[in-house]
Each structure stands twice: as structure tokens, then as C-alpha cells.
Image (tube, rainbow, N blue to C red; front, top):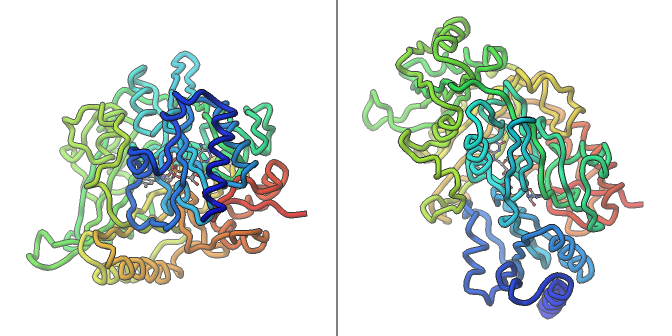
Length: 511
Ligand code: FDA
């Protein structure tokens, strides 16, 4: 403890020496002595499962790039690990916990967004949230948009660097697919852009994950043309309404329908509306169509008439209204809610997530096996998301970006389970692991692929000290397939001493 306390004091002294006067220090450096330390630490944390006996003794919230350069210099000099936090939504909390003495560099003050409607581009600082990005685009244009995830409080720092799947990904690909430039600070404290970082590093940060290669300061993205109106619907069917057959049929068309159509499927289990006191599976077809209602009905009639979609089920709205719709806000909600990034107490709970990719249809019996497993967990506590692939996602070959989940995937599964009390943690984690074991026969193999942004430490972790290529490849190949090898090469070139690291960062090959 004594050593660690000294390290932090030395770090603080170094930082104040290198950066600024003591007035501004108090507004950007938080130690446990500050009354707002705990608020700052917890303001983005929603998953109560993530706990650690080790807290950062400094949270640094820089207001400019030179302060980040100084923090890198001082943390190197005094042997403190850095954890980088943008939106704080990492499933395993790797942006704010660590078992070795560490400092959080929290990018909440670096979140300016500048939109260039003429050239259809935007520069977005890494600390911005998706909600802020969507809001600022819509403020400037009714026919420009961006493709990224559904939850407005997710940060662009982590999200874009791991891929970024959203309700228009069949039309436009991932967020990372639409990055055209970036600014990053490397382990030597140099500020690099696309040109100066070179092709390999620019490739690596667009899907190869945050943390490993440096601190992303900002992204330049391509804005995407959309019509003034899009159409959405959310239609639920239970087992009594033929849900099993519908889910089975959905698998045949989900990746093949018109690219403007993304039919996402949410599966959960709760009381049946038809049989009181009995549980049933609810299959919710949550859909975005980049176009008008008549065109959508035509497409649905052609490819999925079994769902029985009616015009009354559909709502035409602007793209920005669809963001609120998919985030679960009532229609009358003001757009300003997108600017609210703090997680409130009632949004906190215990959570574990995992992912898989499906390349061959899951049989009716396979689906029935999932329904059975739902009965082994509390009602409403588990949810599976089936997110369709195909469309634009297939336009990229696997090695074009580090995100390798391209042609051949019908859909991605996200398994999620949530609970309210710490005492039930063991039971729920055992349940999701059991479901994951059961699914092995139905999902991709060699490797059994996973989505990096749904981080899952069950897949394997690095050692506290050096980690061999072979050990890291166990989890790395699942997220990145063969791109893992190129990521290791880039890491070895740009950060050979492994300054930027966490439990699932790409290790360099030690000489
Ligand atoms: P956070 O700040 O925790 O960072 C995540 C990782 O990236 C950490 O390792 C961190 O160190 C690193 N990092 C962060 N900023 C960095 C920077 N500037 N430079 C370098 N490294 C940096 N995904 C999806 O594709 N589609 C979706 O719809 C959703 N929806 C969703 C909802 C909810 C409620 C959660 C909790 C998560 C999602 N996700 C998702 C997953 C999400 O994309 C993933 O958790 C991202 O990593 C979150 O990025 P943040 O910046 O918020 O996290």
C-alpha cells in the first residue's frame, strides 16, 4: 500500500508540474479526498456486478490533449497503469477497474462534436455519447444520420473502436466502417492522425478495440444520407401465437431482406397474456426500415408474410425520433433526453452479457431447448437479442477491418441476464453460462466467434505480467478471427513495451 500511495503522490506532483496551475487542477483531478470523487467514479457505472477492492486513487478528467500527453508521461515515469474511460459501458468494467495501481483518464470533458453538412462529415471527440452525436446531427440536418448503437449513453471512444452495431447496420455497416480519420495519442505521447499514424494503426483502431493502441481523442466520420421519414414497428408474438415457427422462419430471411430493413428479434420469458399464471416466450420483432410505410409493407409481404404485419403496427417518423423509439422512450419525450449521460440509481443493476454468431439455422428443437432454459431463470430477468447481419456488413471482406464478422453470418446473438440482489449473482451467472454451453452446437465454431463490444472475460484473459501470443489468441481469435495476428503485429510495432493494456488488450510479441 505504501508503495502505491507513493506512486500516486509522485504522479500527482509530476502532473501538476507538467500541466497547469493549482486552480484548474482541482477541477480535473479527483482523489478519494475530494467530496465528488465517488460521484465521478460512479456516474457512468450501471453494472453493479463489477466490483473491485482496488479503486483508482486518481481520476483525471483532462480538458485538452496536452494534459493527456502529460498524464501518459507521468504514468510511465511512476509505473501507474492507465485505464481509459469514455462512456464507461464496458461489460466487464475494464475502463474503471484494475488490480494493479492505476489512474483513470476519463474523457468526459472532451466531447465536442462538429458537423460539416456540406461535406457530410463530422469530427467527434471520444468522450461524447451516442445520444449527443445523434442529437447534434439532427440539429443540423433532417436527411443526414450516423449508424451506431441503440443506447444513447454509450460512449464513442469504446464503441467505435470495437465496431458499433445499430439499427441501420444492414444498410450502412458498423460505426467503425464509417470512420474516415482519427486523432490518437500513442504510448510516446505523440498526437497522430490518419496520415501520420500510418495504414496499419489506422486499420487497427477501427474494430480492434480501445485501450490497446493508444488514447483515441476524436473520430472523423462519414455522415449518411437518409430520407426525412423512416418507419419503425415493434410486434410481439408469444408461443401461443406461433412464436417458435416465426423465429424459425425469421432465420431464413433476416440477413437476406432489403438492406433498408433490419428486423431485430428480442426474446424473453414472462407471464402469458393468454394463460394467467403461466409463463410463455415473447418474441418481439423490433424493426427499422429506412423508407416509408408502404414500401415496408410491400417488403414484409414479400419476405415475411407469416408475421401478419399490419399498417397500424407501423409508425413513420424522423430518424432522430426513431433513436428515442429504440431506446425505449415514449413518443412525447423531448430530444433533450439524448444529452443526459449520467446513470441514475434506478438504472443500476447486476448484469452479465455474452455473444455468439449463427451461421446455420437453429432447428425448431434447438429453439425449444432455449425456451426450456428460460424456465430455469426468473421471469423477465433474461433476454436474448438476435441481430441480423447481411447487407452492407457483407460488403467488407473479413480482413478489411479488424471486425471480422462479415459474409456467412446470419445473425449475432446477445445473451443478457440481469438481477437485483448480489446474493443471486452466482445463480444468474451459472444460468447464462449453462445457456452458452447449450448453444455451442448451434453457433459458429473454430473459432466460436464473439463480438468484442460485448466483452466477456469468460473467453480468456491476459496475465498480470507478460502474456504469450498463444494465450491471448484463445480469446483474441474469437473476437477478431485471423485479424488477431495483424493486430499483434501492429501492437508490437506501436507499443512494444505494452504500456496500454488491460485484461483483454492485444499483447505485443516480446523480443
Ligand atoms: P468504456 O469507456 O467503458 O470503454 C470501453 C473500452 O474501450 C475500455 O477498454 C476502454 O478502456 C476503451 N476506451 C474507451 N475510450 C477509449 C479511448 N478514447 N481511447 C482508447 N480506448 C478507449 N454495442 C453495440 O455495438 N450496439 C449497441 O446497441 C450497444 N448497446 C449497448 C447498451 C448498453 C446499455 C451497454 C452497457 C453496452 C452496449 N453496447 C452496444 C456495447 C458497447 O458498444 C461497448 O460496451 C463499448 O465498449 C462502450 O464504449 P464506452 O466508451 O461507453 O465504454
